[in-house]
Length: 346
Length: 148
Image: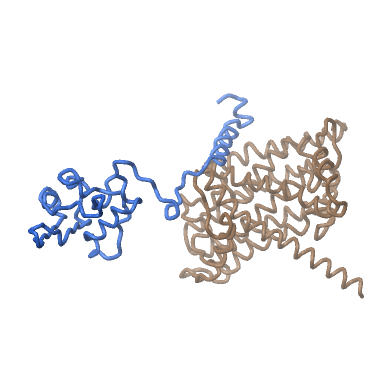
């Protein structure tokens, strides 16, 4: 009995820690986005709320909570209400299987990567429902575009993961990370990004498409569709959509790091150098999380960086890229992975 | 576009290079209420009135500025003092009418009136665009507005 209670306690603490990390990361990410956008455009960005404007997202969140919920006339009230929740919840659920560190993982299930692919596609239901129930043509168009885009790019995403699974020989994310331990020669880490460079590139592109980020943000294209699927949303319901988007960015970056960049493993030559200077317990429990987060941080910055560099694709270009370029390349990548693995080349 | 450019999308990398360059450059934003903009030497803002070294007002109330003002924004009222000296009772400029041409500054025979550097002239009350003598004299003492 006591063991069960202890297990539950540890489990709850883990969940609390991961969710805090995810939501705290979201808040921080909104700040990074605004600051990064500002600096790339030679502006200053948030400055006044807290040091360097760090508390600006919190102030914005409080403002969103205090605002009025507006339901448009003739909107489907039930769907309109649950759409943001459906969009937000799955993006948080992804974190359940991501190994942030060797001992920091809520659940190590043996089909982790399939779980992630399944859960991350659920968020699209929220977007489509939000677009449909708003009783607004722009919202509907946004929702439809979103659905088409997700279907097109989910295939690429799934296929680019196949290569990694072939190399690791397991669907469990923990096993995938452990399979990337060690180094080849000259201290080049044994991360899957090296043999799977094509898969990495494909995952990178479809990662942007899956999170509705520029250059693939057609579902919410402000200049064409007002605000896309959340045109009619206000207050915290809008906030949930936005937070869902940011949490999805973080979670897909975590997946990216786990699959291709060795998860919480340090670089083979920098790792021992830094860890030699620190106490053993710190190295065992804290440093993996630090390595993991620093890798994730790079991709989070990449999201902002790319957003202010590349313009939005046209809708036909989006579909042409997805079906005529990425999917054939993804199939090719599967073949490459199979050949490399079968003949033990890598 | 060459084949290699097409395959490796080097243009995207080039674009990323441009944006990261701007990311690390200094923002051009001016934090206005905290940092005030330094106006140029020949900037023509709200008027100031100058004094002699001994503190006496330079303006003798000749009325030339009021005469030349194209917008008729200046109003001067004078009276005679004890030793028949002319005293300036009122010297009022309607900054809402003023076109900041600088004729008053140019025509003044005693170098009393100048266009200063004050440009924060907005007010919530349209009736408060008039500035009087005391205010302009005070601005003449203030190094923020007086650039001469």
